[in-house]
Length: 89
Image (cartoon, rainbow, N blue to C red; front, side):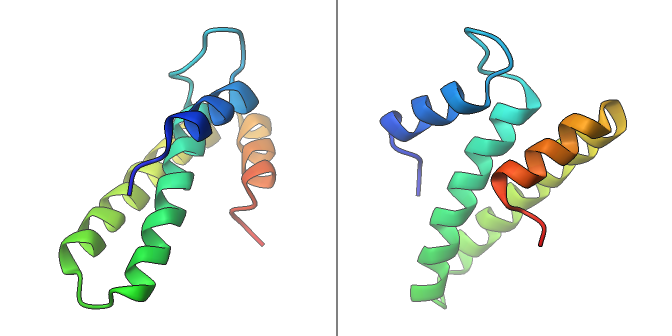
């Protein structure tokens, strides 16, 4: 499941560090999180869809690497992003 163009634009606008920013870790993690949430709902319904499950695990792994990069570089930005995306309880 991909993210709709309108939703993607709103995520970019919300998480961008500066105007025109589409590649910062915050924006990438926000878009990946949206895709992960969409795929999670799909996998809950279609339990035997192993191809989608594999893709979901790849997305989760990519998001984890980006979050690790952000945590090493700037922990305050990392904590802010985690809180805004509600990733940790």
